[in-house]
Image 1 (cartoon, rainbow, N blue to C red):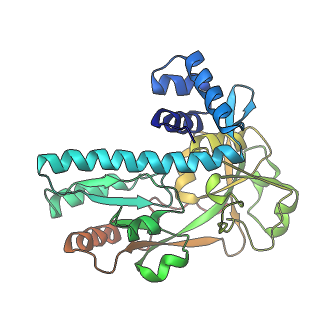
Image 2: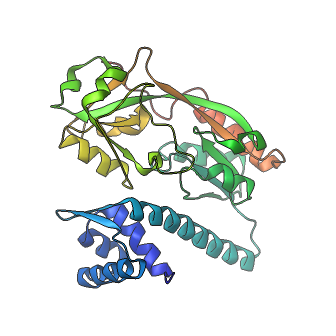
Image 3: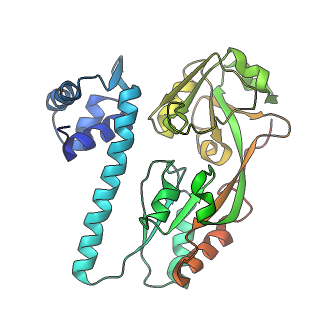
Length: 307
């Protein structure tokens, strides 16, 4: 398969920015040149990678599969380049962390400030990994600490420490029939179109459980390799429904035309853990202690109140 780093960067930029114009600006190339590069890539792969929806490009099943590979490869290339520079300079390798919810690290500045005080000289690096990869990366020693909530077969090979619980909420347009509801149940999902990030792509093996109530049967389910902002925009301008943790959607409630609704009674929640190798160093131990000081038993920002 004839694919180079520029192709991987193209896939990542298009998925992140959704339009050729925005992606071309990010990559500092002309829009026609980027369009031709995408066409040539699709010709080499003998399959389209994106669906054209007006000016927006949305990854299809083939595109989502290639995007997962692209992001993993790009993250490893960036990490390797960084490590080589540090090795050449004789510097100590930084502490590497990854999270299964890599779209939002709003809690990180407070942790870094404490780390500078308690662990002077320690460098921290956030690794961008697919959401289903942190435990594998931890066991392969590509990272030192993982924040996880979706546990897989590798869970018995790592050390887990409970960090906090958060609430999953339905996110809808402010004009959606659910917007005035106190809560929704599994039966309410029967007639709706649910849109989720591609973490929940059910073609993956093994598939990641959907963040909706047991027994819910949505009329339609779509997964897309898009960021939080675009996912919120998609539901704000349609009758679609998405599901997000309360702390992730909270900053958007006052600035976007959306509402959030509790799912179930009691509300649907999940537990986050820090995952480390059993033979973790004193430095990792100290950093995990910092995370628990700042995040332990509570979400990174106050939960949204139930309506």
